[in-house]
Length: 256
Image (cartoon, rainbow, N blue to C red; front, side, top):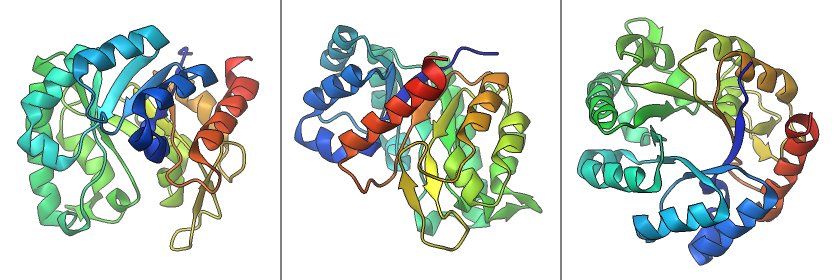
C-alpha cells in the first residue's frame, strides 16, 4: 500500500487565481492540501513561485501544459518545472478539431518525442484523459489504451481522471488496476447523474455517484503517488468547494 499525498488541481479555482494567485495559494495551503498541480502560473516568475511554495510548504506536483505550449515553448516549460521542483508535465486536453484517428496517430508520435525531452530533464510526461479518448479507435483499440500500449512507459505516464473514466462507461476500479505502476497521478472528482450523453455536474467529494472509498483503496494498491482533487465546475464558490472536498478527505482518508 502506497502512502498517497493529496493535492489540488488549480484549474478548479481559476477565477480566484486570476484575481490573486498568491492569496489563493495561501488559502489552499491553509486548507491542508499538500501540493498543487498548475494550469498556468499567473505571470509569476519561476523563482518567485518556488520561494512561495517553499514558504507555504506546498509541493509542486506538476503542471497541465496545453498542446500549443508543448509545441511552441517546450524549453520554457521544462525550465519552469525544474525551477519549482515539479516532477510531472501533463498534456491536459486536445481541441475538438484534433481528435480523429489520423490526428491521434500524429499526437502519439509527438507525445513520445515530448516524453523523451522531459525525461532527459528529469521530468515525467503524462496524459490526462476526458471522455473522448474512449470514443475513437486506432486499429480497433480505443485511444486511451492505444497510446499507452504504443508509447513506452518511460516516456508517457497515466494521469487518470477517474470521474471521466466512469462517465465513459468504463469500470474505474478495473482501469486503476490495469494501469498499476504506470499511474502516479489520479484526479479524484465526483460526478452526479453521470450517465453518458446526459448533463452532468461535478460536485464536491462525497456528493456524487462515484465509489470514492473503493477508488482510493484501489489507487493505493496501484502505487498512485498523488490524489489530486479537481472540480471542473462548481455550483458553490470554488474555494468553498475545494475546502469541503478537503474536509471529506480528512474525514475519510487522511485521518484514518
